[in-house]
Length: 313
Picture 1 (cartoon, one colour):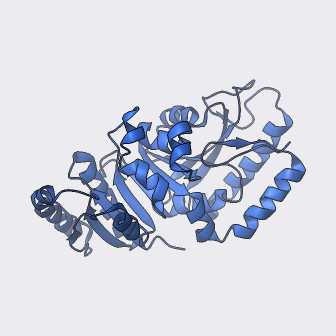
Picture 2 (picture 1 turned 135 degrees about the horizontal axis):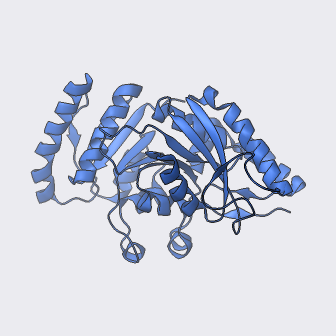
Picture 3 (picture 1 turned 90 degrees about the vertical axis):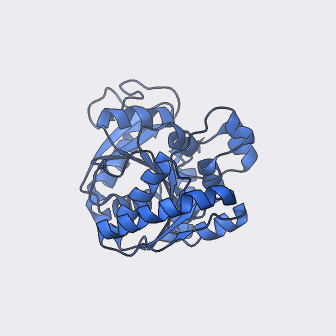
């Protein structure tokens, strides 16, 4: 499956302009349809003020990339209309969120809402499009969805070198910590750690088939989001990639998710790919059932893409 349709929502901010620029750049490279719309529920007065400026920017980007990018659409008048628009896209591009802390519990921002409801991959843009990604870090769970996640990342990243990061559960272990280490450079390992090393090495060996220029397997332990932040800085990556298992609004408010934490706090652009979208993208329904049975038999613990750990042993 290709990334054939890209939708970007902009609020007219600097981050919104960066999101439009990055989306146009990606659409031109992928040959994807490109739709620009003002952010959902934006007032009429603000739309009249912003729409001409955004339209001029879109025309300029069209000339720059040699493609027709189309007209700027009005802001969706309701969240239901917004999710209907998002459902037509393979990739929804959003400006980096500004709201943080407890205010997100009673007034969720655009990224929080999209993580709960959007039925496509999400690219949260924090950097200007002029900043090349250069290198990316992908958090993988070593499950059936990992190849599909890397295929989406390779499609969007365009032959980037990747750091494949797998985070073991629980407290930091001997020879491991939040600061990820290459395979083979640690002390005595547990059976689970050896299993993870083997699976991660196999995933890295197949990376070229998913469009990755190179892949270096890295293993860490502890808190998943913190490990991603540390490794992103360590590798100087400009793009972070991870999966996301959608939760109910109540569970998301009470416990949060790795995807939400990374999207709000990472110092780079973040690609979040929902589990359900990956399952349809790669036809993984039967594979997931087989994987679940295998885990129940083998007793290994596996990281789900939302950062929750489930022990089967």
